[in-house]
Length: 224
Length: 221
Length: 49
Image 1 (cartoon, helix red, strand yellow):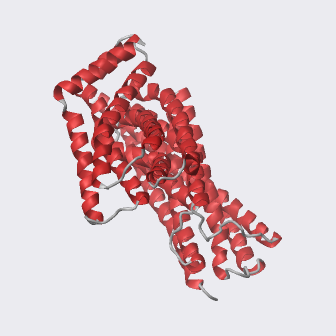
Image 2 (cartoon, helix red, strand yellow):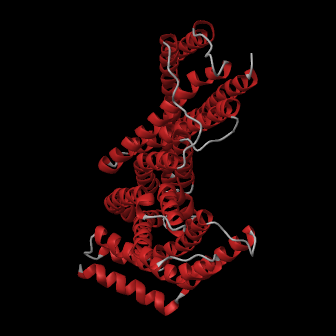
Image 3 (tube, chains in turn yellow, brown, green):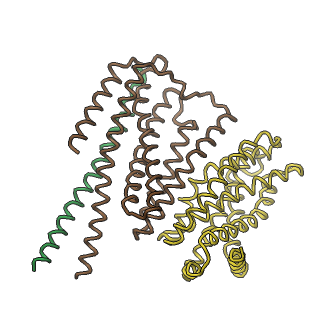
């Protein structure tokens, strides 16, 4: 537990000192939101069933940028070897890195979601807010667990920055589909019963992929 | 190998004979329905390939024997070829019957996403040189790719139940003669699969052997 | 005979695809076999000297 916190603190400190991935994540996310808004046509009312998808496209594209940095930072100075030589278990490294990714995603979302609500003229009512946060957290959990495993893989390849989205997106399709559906229902003001089955699906995804990523991480990080 | 090839050829000839001359043409869909006798076995064998890749991936991670990695790689490659054919035949079937090239039917969607996942696997395989690393990474990818299958399927099905589509697939009641043709086609495709797997695994083993010989040669020189 | 062109196209794709794949992998295998033979010959020569 102490080791987990040490790694998380180290990563966050490094990030806040250089601020390179968060800045690019946020900027890229906003860029996607703006471009898609223009592509659909400004001045038009965009239906919630479409804008829900746009929000998650922007968040996921920007989150991939952040994911990429977490391991390539370690690779650049061969820090990962030091980490592996230390008596810290691979599982601990996994949990720590996953938490860092999770935190990055939340920071990005805190900026991107209000930007989205303004640009796309949407609103989340006060009583829907807890469910909205639940949807976001469920996606973050699934994304950061598979993302951590696959970014460890992609950072070990020769073309690391293009490999990550290639490997990650196909696996994430069901999670993204479920989240988009739930968000669209929520944004159009439907009750929980309308999208509860989608939430169960994201929970199943999170559960299965957290488990398998946790177990498989050791095999990846030892080879990296 | 030669007997296997001749058995497969015989099986295919018999299957084609049954499909076209023994089984009656389906009343509603007409001649196009005959795609089905090859479409379904293709889907079955491709799914079998991915399942095998999953098992071999686990075995590799447990035993660290390079042979399992090579088997897993062959299965994925054959699976991708077969899934491509599944998607093409599915599309060609959908067009005259449902008047569309593509529908987000759960099975078609699952096939498409599987295709994407395993093409990603092949790209990953091409981009790593070191053998141990490549084997471990690919094994992990084969495992999580297959773990994704049930979730993909349920999400595609849920998508449809919430947004009902007029098209109903899989409601084809099979006459006994159709079942027989299908069974024979299935056996024929599994035999074909065995041939492909043999050729491909031999090739990959040869490749590994050449690398070893090359390294030895370099050491001596 | 309605829609026979779709059936024909499907068969063409299936058999075209499978035979193309077989030709490609069989071709690769042939090349590799030659290479292995060559390498082994080299080895035998090296041992003889």
